[in-house]
Image (tube, rainbow, N blue to C red; front, side):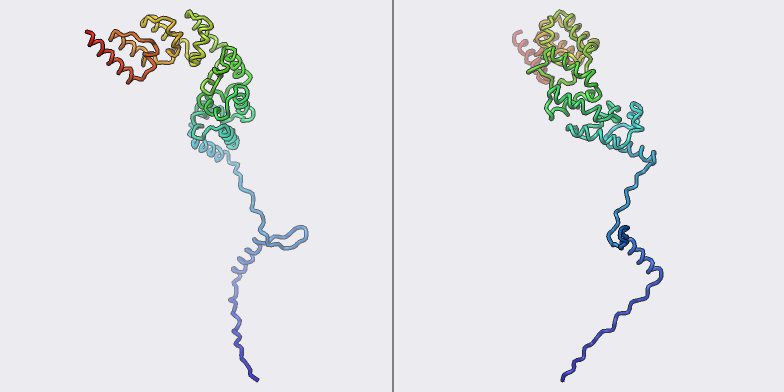
Length: 312
């Protein structure tokens, strides 16, 4: 019989734990364990994390709103001066306004200009103040969705205008005037909707009719150049008509053919170009005088000067 000897290693000794280490180990086990209140069974399932801390520090909350405005490129001082309600508006409400505008295609980089112009938007209710405007533009005006943001960027005042008291009456008036079919309101002309019918639109039509145009002629001029309804009577119409009739010795039929005349700067373009033409003894139609660029106008002036020199 063969006897084999098997070597059995001695058990590893376990170093004694200090009371402090034992307490730490016990504490870690308790953190990983919880007791089921129904059956009293100890479970090692991790307990749910504690709820996040919500600060009630009004100073800290206000500072968060200020930082939020700065991130949007909005002047906080100006916003507070023009809209004191902003101080009591929650950050969540501010972000709901941002989300509403974003949903209509307005980029975050564009909020600064809009909120600086109309800080009251910072404390508005999107559901009662903003979405009705978007619904009006989509369904009443008939703008395509992708045109909405163009309309707002062109005229942010739309966002603070009452649909029932301002926008709908203006739309009805403009449609009766002839803004339908191929001349319907677009994102380029929705700015007309923020104008008062009695206080702004009708007086401008009356002024043009008072010059000697018929109602039909004025309507045709406005449909060809809708900007006429946005110009000031005192600062635009009167001085430009006076210069046209007294200095340029123009005929009203020229304005009827080219109503865009009123969209050009009187000092910056109309007077300067007219005087150059007078110096050269030239007379050209309004459209030829104003529509071309400065470079092309100068080139034509030199060409006309050379032609006159050859004839002499």
